[in-house]
Image (cartoon, rainbow, N blue to C red; front, side, top):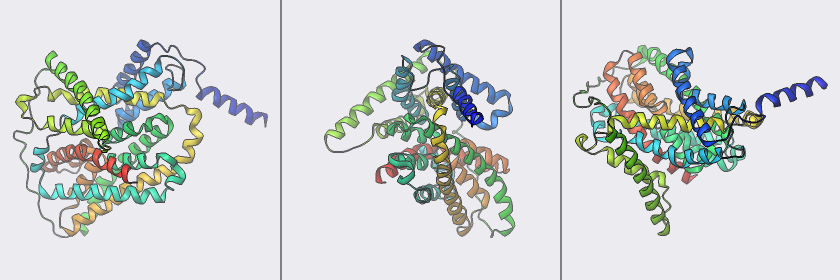
Length: 405
C-alpha cells in the first residue's frame, strides 16, 4: 500500500503544475509563439515530422502547461484573458484566412468522376458518424458534448481541421481541453492509418477490379499562380478584411436571431470568406499569403488547446478514449466502404476512390501526397481542388449534423 500511495503521489507531482514561470500576458504570448516555432522545427529536422505540426504543437502545449512553463486554462491570472481572446477571435480569423484560398470555380476541372466520388464520400461520412455515435454509446457516454462532437467529426472527415475547429469553436468544445486534445490525437492517428490503407488497398484490389474508365487529365494552366512578394498592403488588407468580416458576421447573426433564425456567426463568416474567395485574382492580390497567415493563427490556437489540457484529468479521457476511437473509426470505414463500392459499380479505378476518400478524411494535402505515392500524377490537381471543396463544405455539414442531433 505505501508503494502504491507513493507512486500516485509521484504521478500527481509530475502531471499537476506546482506554479508557473509567469502569467504575464506578454510572457504567455511569447511562449505560445515559441511553441509554434518549436513544432515547425521538429517537423523540418526530426523524425517527428510524421506527427505533423498540428499534433506536435498540441503535445508541446500539454508539456509546457503540465511542467509549469505556461499556465493552464484554469490557472488564475491574466493568461486566461489571452486564451479567451485566442478562442474568441484568433481562431475565427484563422478559419476566415484559410477559406480565402478556396476557388470553387476551379472545381469544374477536377473531373466528374472524382467529384462524384468525393460528394458521395461526404454523405457516407455523415452516415458513418451517426452509426458510430450509436456504437460508441452516444449521449450516455459523452453527455451534452455528443452533438458538437458529431458535428466536429462530420466536418473534419468531409474537409479537414479547419472545419473541425470551426464547429469546436462555436460550441466551445475546447473548454474541455482533455476531451478536445484526445479527439485531435485520435483523428490524427486514424488519418495517418487511412493514408496507409489508401496506398495498400488499391494495389490489392487492382487484379480483382473490372475494366475501368480513364480519367481525363485536367490542365493546370491558369490554376497555379505565381506568388509575388508579400507587401505591407497585403497584410493590412488581410487583417482589415478579417476584423471587418468578424464584425459583420456577428452583426448578421444577431440580426437574424432577432427575427427567429438561429444561424451561427461561423456560418456567416464562412460565407463571407467564400464570397471573397471567388473574386477575380486582380481584385485580391493578398490571397497568396492568406493561407500562411491562417496557418500561423491555427497553430497558435492549437498551442492554447494544448495548454488547456490538464493531465490530472487523464482518468476521464481513459474512459472516453475507446468510445472516441470506435466513433471516429466507424465514420472513416463507412466513408471508405461506400467510396470504393461506388467506384467499382461505376467502373472507376480504385486509385481514384482512394484519393477521393483521402480528400475527405485527410484533406487536400494528404490526398495530393497519396496520388503521388500511387504514381498517379494526373490525380494530384483534382486532389488539391477536392480538398478545397471539402474546406468549403465541411463546416456546413458539421453544423447541420450538430443541429439535428
